[in-house]
Length: 264
Length: 252
Image (cartoon, rainbow over all chains, first blue to last red; front, side):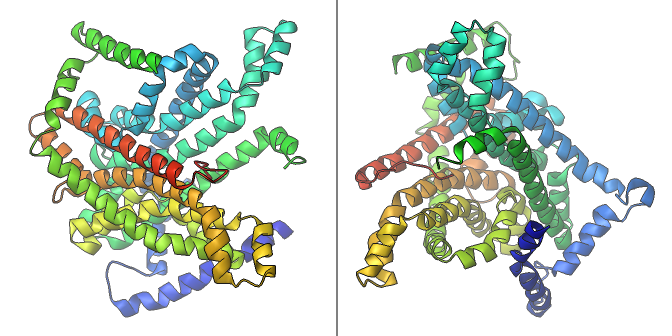
C-alpha cells in the first residue's frame, strides 16, 4: 500500500501537464491538438460506451482492438517459440552457429517494413501477411539472445549433468533453459515492443481492421481526436504489455535476481 | 569466417534449387534473379538518389535528436528529481510506435519531408536520451566527489568527469538510434508517399507490376547500408574510446 502511494506520488507531474494542456490547447485554436478531455471523450465514445452486458465495450473494440491484439500476441508467441527452439539448437552447436551467424546478422539488418510489399505479394491481404511481417520483424532479438544465452551455459554444470547421466530433456529443462532464461527474457521484451510497432505497420497496408487501420481511417476523416485516441491507446497497450511481461519475468526469474543480489 | 561464407553460399544455392524445383511459392523470384537485380540496382539512376534522400532525412533527424536529447539526458542524469518527474512521460511515450504518428504528422506538418524528419526524431530520441541519462547517472561518484573536493565547479566536473565517462554509452545510443532512424525514414516514405527515398522507390517498384525481385534487392541493400552505418559507428567508438574500460558496452 505504501509502495502504491509512493508510486502515485511519483506521477505528480502528469496531472500538472494534463491541466496545462487542457487550458492552453483551446488558446492555440489548432484542430491538430485537441484537449486531453476531448481525447478521453473520443476514446470513451469509440470503445467504452457499449452496453453493460458487454462490460461497456463497444462493437468497435471487436473491430479495432481485438484483431490487433490477436495478431500482436500470436505473432509474438510464434516468433518466441521459433526463436527459442532455433536459438537453443544453434547456441548448443558452435559449428552450426558458425555457419548461420552471418545470415542471422544480415536478416536482422534488413528493415522489416521494406519487405512489406514482398509479404503482400506472397500472402495477399490478410492475417497471414500481417503475421509474417510481425514474425520476421521481431524474431531476431529472441533468436540472437537465446543463442547467446545457450552458448554460455556453465561448463561445470553440463559436465556434472553428464556424470549424473541426465537425459537430454533433463539437461535442457534443468540446466540450459534456466541458465539462458535471463537473456531469453531480455530478448522477449525487445520483441514484444517491436511487435507493437510491426502490428501497426502491417495494418496500415493489408488490413480491414485493427488499430493501424483505424488510424488510417481517422486520418482520412480528419478525425484528430480519433487519431490521438489511437496513439494514447497504443501507449497504454505498450505500458500494459511491458508491465505484464516484467511481472512474469519476476516470477520466473526470482531465483536469478535473488542469487545476484548479494554480489552486486 | 570461412564457415559464415559457406553458410551464406549454401543458403543462396539451396534457395535457388528450392525455387527451381518449385518448392517455394512462384510468387518469389529465383535467388539468381534477386542477386542479379541487386547488382544492377546499385548504379540504378532511380535507386541511388532514393538512398541519398533517405540517408539525408535520417541524418538530419538524428542530428537534431542528438543536439536536443544529449543535453536533456545530461540534465536528467544529473538531477534525479527531474528524472523522476519526467519518468512517467518517458515510460508512456516510448512504447508508442513512431509509425503510428505518421497519419497525425502528415496532417499537422502538411509537408511530407518535415513530417518524416519529425517522426525520425521521435523514434531516435529514446536510445540517445536513455543511454545518456543512465550513463551520466552511473558516473563513478568517487571521481566526481574527488573533483568537487578539489574545488572544481559543476561545469568542470561535467567537462572532465561526467561527459568523458558517459561518452561511449552515448555513442552506443547514437548508433542504435541511427539504425532506427533509417528504418523509420523508410517506413514513413512507404506510407506517406512523398517526395523520394527508398520507401517511395519500393512503392513505385511494387505498383509498377509486381517486380518482387526489385523490392527484395532494395531491401537487401537497405540491410547492407544499415550494417555499414552500424559498422562505422562501432569503428568510430573503438578509435575514439580506446582508453575506456567499457567501450562498446551497451546499456540498453
